[in-house]
Length: 107
Image (cartoon, rainbow, N blue to C red; front, side, top):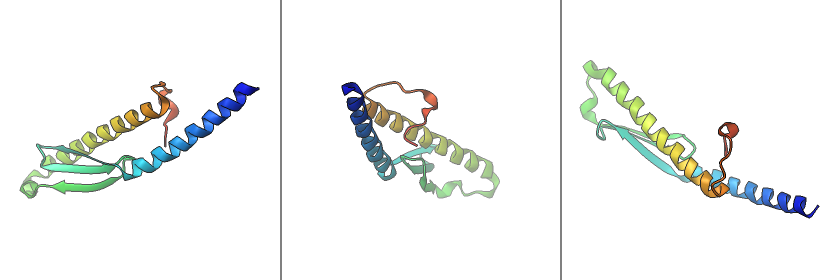
């Protein structure tokens, strides 16, 4: 029975750390870009887009497709960085324990 009590205590500690991680992810801002910085996107650690910057030189009606492609590329770049940051933070939290991919923590 002593082990169950210890496991419950560890689960509560993990839950508290997860809540702290949730809060910190809202405060973290991560940027990515495309086109050598012509398009940049900033997202929170939870994947909420905060800023989209487009260099005025791209504002040409004849090249809308290029601009669209760069926006998609910038969003994908920052999304990858957000996921890498989340994985890094989760590894710290779980002590390197490999959790199943479908667990979708901390969301």
